[in-house]
Figure 1 (cartoon, rainbow, N blue to C red):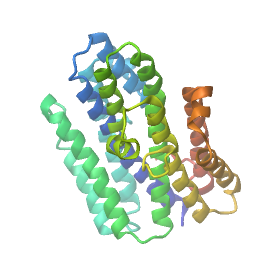
Figure 2 (cartoon, one colour; figure 1 turned 135 degrees about the vertical axis):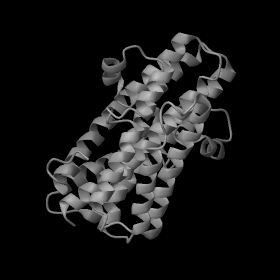
Figure 3 (tube, rainbow, N blue to C red; figure 1 turned 30 degrees about the vertical axis):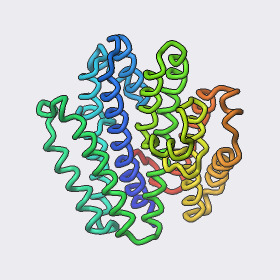
Figure 4 (cartoon, rainbow, N blue to C red; figure 1 turned 90 degrees about the vertical axis):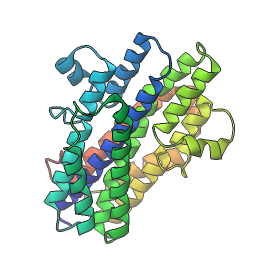
Length: 316
């Protein structure tokens, strides 16, 4: 496969997945602010969210003070923000258009109609009550795109690079959510009531569609250790780090070329560390330290994938 074609497919998938992940975080944060909370707590939550998605500094430069409405608008609709949901879906469509002949007509029509529909969502017409519907729409369109891709595309290199982008982006997102939220929630747990703890931890799980899975796996109270174990080491959990990196490694084995030996080795190393890792060891050495190292390694892996398989200036 031509490196430019692989590049467009890879970034098409990453931007589609990224838009869904942003919608998930915003939806959960909006739901949590319905609880009675001090204004400083709400501001800290949204500041943390902006930091999680790497948008705090540009937001402060453009908007100044953090507030719920400003943060939602910036992450959802701001066209000058390349990391907004609208811009992610726009870039997903641009990459799909560049390889339209490689995609099935159903895949192209799904991504194109998503782009057309989001342009109909105007920031001044999406009320607070309609935000939840907007976030659900974003998640649904992402689910629909993946389903159409899975059900209509030939299982060849084109599909492999699509899944490579999907799972690397998903692993990055799960790690960032845990890195931003886990220590703050664990620290606050001693100073809040049990009901508050429950809603905070359940919100974290819901942000990665893991609440119902947690109940099926553990059938007990939500505890920090189990949340970390589920989202890092549980291979059967579709958004867990282990599941995502296992899929990344599998794809890299299939598409390996003469230049990718070291990339494949590093992906296998990450996969093995998750397969044989112990959550108690991770917690003992510091979960944020582990997650920071994980993000560094996956960032390096993404750079190596771009060098080995994609165009030299691959930025999406």
